[in-house]
Amino acid sequence: QVQLVESGGGLVQPGGSLRLSCAGIGFRLDYYNIGWFRQAPGKEREGVSCVSGSGGSTYYADSVQGRFTISRDNAKNTVSLQMDSLKPDDTAVYYCASAADPRMVMHSSGPYSCFTAALYQRWGQGTQVTVSS
Image (tube, rainbow, N blue to C red; front, side):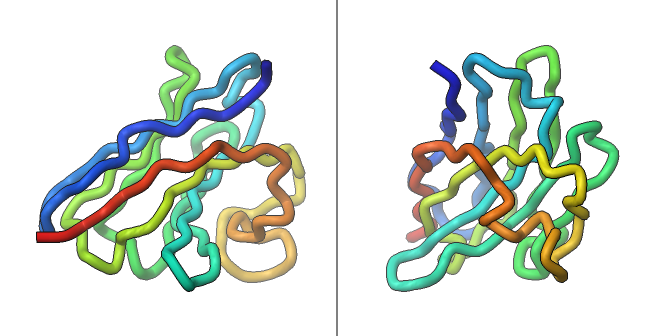
């Protein structure tokens, strides 16, 4: 079965770190742009970070810039999101998604932005991240 599977979520204190992983099952992630999104209770889903298929381009939301790092491990067929200096506002369900649209660009504005959820064809089930003391 072709799917994306996230892992690595959990409960962490403010200032702590977590590393989320997105694994491709049944298909190669390096053929796709990969985005990480999150959705907190009562809020809309928002883009967090994205990486191009080649891994040469990345983009981050302003709210996580300097704290989160997205990376690929093609040998393991995974895309990771290292999250440092976590804040309570980072609490949400985090999703990874894959997109094959060649028009996608690694920034947050415009119809082909990597933060445009409608451009992604496949989504994982999500992993909960809770930042609380």
